Image (spheres, rainbow, N blue to C red):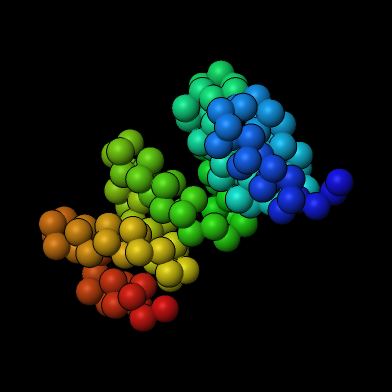
Length: 132
């Protein structure tokens, strides 16, 4: 009953069935117990308004919790959000962290920034992120 991984998995089952309110409940219980994947999934529900009202603040809260918990995909998405909000330096920092955790999308973003945004990321910083 208090297994966060099992709770999160049940949330996924409910979400696949389109039972978004039920999924929200399962994910919320798992997140309360520290499951980072559940935080990541909650961010999507808040982004899309599935089972809950759309709420960008709660979306970002759960993305940050997942990123802090070590989920590279969440860190990548935080970078995308920062980039889209004109905060390129913060985006690059998120992508460097997630690239060192092996996130391919972040590596691709860093390569693009290196090629297209002169001086935003140094060759040394890029190499360090790719070596990790």
